[in-house]
Length: 117
Image: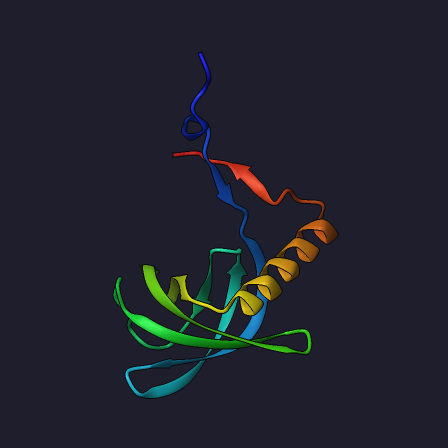
């Protein structure tokens, strides 16, 4: 019997970073620091109070490229919010994936880790 691919799902590996970012939320702009990133989203330290479901626009530099996307807040822990990419161009997603892969290789890490519930 063939094993289901859902029996051992993989979670995208997050990589610790410290990247300045600008985010737009409720008509105003503010600055934050991206503290980790994967090809599915970011964690960012912010000064405002967010709740799960809030939508914001984020911009940051990846090398010489400006990356921007719309994201949805998936979790909030103090001043740190987890943001899932919601609306992102293929070009910006490719830039992020390349950046993450390069950082993972430089640190000797795998691109996916086994899922631990």
